[in-house]
Amino acid sequence: MAYTGKPPLSTEAMEPINQLLGELNDDGDMASLQVLRQKELHDIVERGAMGSSVDLEIMLHEYGKVSEPYKAYYGQVDVSDITSWGKFGDRLYHKNIRSFKGSTEVNDAIVSTIRDAPDNFLYFNNGITLLSGELSKKPLGGKSKSSGVFVCKDSSVINGAQTVGSIIAALSAPNAVPSTARVMVRLISLEKCPADFSFVITRATNTQNKIEKRDFAALDPEQSRLRGDLLLSFGKEYVFRTGDQPPAPDKGCTLDEATVALACANSDITHCMNAKRAISRLYDDITKAPYTILFNAGLTATKLWRAVDVLRRVDTFLRSGQKNREGKERLVAIHGNRVLLYLIFRSLPPDVFEKDSADAEMARIPVLAEDRLARLTNEVLTKYAPSSYVGNIFKNTTKCSAIAASIV
Image (cartoon, rainbow, N blue to C red):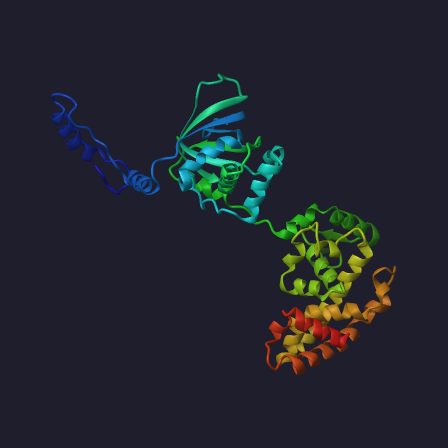
């Protein structure tokens, strides 16, 4: 009997059915009843679309167990054992939010670690989470936790699809060599779980804060050094980790503020343009340029704080200056803020970043900014603005290089 309701049939509804079954089975077991409710119907449709269920036998090494409130096991799995999972194709991920994405920058790095640094793979990788409709341990090995074989019926990888796919890709390639790598795996049983538990846990394990490129700057020892130097030299706080509370302007500065200031202070206008268009490019790789051009052992706390001071004074000037301008002149003051900052840095004496005191030079910035903004506006409006939108001009490195060269 099939119906689309969620609750079981009522006692009243079952009474005539049971009476009929009794009559049919009076001389033996001739008939039986199977009730298909909404969930069972959905499962049938899903199995028809996805094919047969994924049943796995997984050997966990050095495993542990969670008994309450729901049964789960965790431990290490040899990546070579995971290769056999490839026969199930996308059915491996039928409850996941996405399947294996193939060759990507991250997945290629997973493959590389498996091949070149297998001993590190367990430490570098976040692991795999697998849900099973039924989960049981074979009696092999007795009570020893050194290893155990687990039978996982109707299974799906709900987190770690890229890891599983990359392992299969790495070890199934024609030139693949056996790997000694292991990966952490969690096996979670859906037995005795709430009806929507698979959805809830899939959403939870795949909902994470996105890691931005700038976050890796927190791993750079130079950032920690600058934080200490800035505190000792100026009594200022320097915040470079995502999530830390930014200090008040008079108390310190942030990594992003310092990055923009240092990029515009550099003689190569390309860094200034990146600070304007896509600051993330400056954090692409903390071991290479352009990041290492801005942040390196030669960067002093004095230069960093002085550069930020210049940035703030120019921004203060622009906030008041934008109110007194209209039309395209106002657009130049808005969109050209980083090019103007670049021009101000070019106008300051070279030793301004190393002097113990630069009060005189700092006091001149509003006057310098007034002059450079006037010249910048004239250059843009007479040579470029008649045929180009002002905002687009300040996204074009070639045009901005020419404009700056004509002013400096």
